[in-house]
Image (cartoon, rainbow, N blue to C red; front, side, top):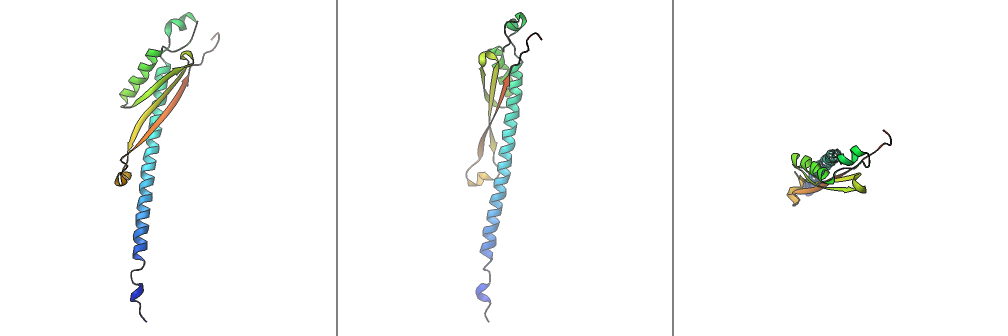
Length: 137
């Protein structure tokens, strides 16, 4: 009885399985990193929107005629916050100065995907803020 013909027949299977498992682990590592970077971008957008929402149009607010943000000051406050965090983004003011939207753009530097030609993943996060006013209060 000859056993030599079957010798080593599982070696290619194990080699291919190991490569597949390593690729899957790399996908999980970089996917998780990109998800964390997206969460960070969203958090930065929320904080920038909060900073922008605090820039009220003081003369109109004091007179009681309108509660809105000062557009220039709001954009500057959001951009200053993002610059302090080494991030960049866009600030949009709508609804006559009562609604703010901040979108932060960032990149995640991959750890494993760089071996297949993907060194960065672009991520973004968006936050909305709306001024709430209360009559007589």
